[in-house]
Image (cartoon, rainbow, N blue to C red):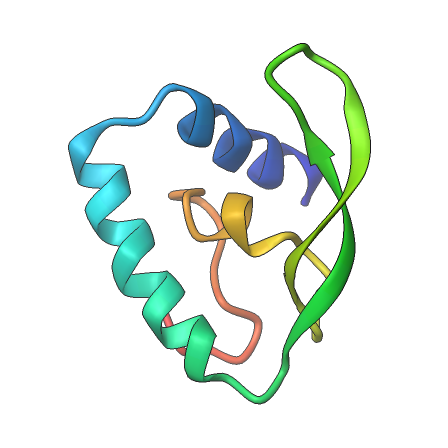
Length: 81
């Protein structure tokens, strides 16, 4: 699971148009999901540190949505995408 999220963070920092479009579609689905949560998440930052920041995460798997929606290998735990 960690490898999938790291892939998503990589795509966040080095975006490509296809990944960005897919992430927008996935994020729009997540935004409507009642399991989406807002709070503190661990984030991998551009200075290569991991810090706790405020953001959205999946209430089912607890992954940060900014990375999860960009990972080609990851899937919604509820099967929504």
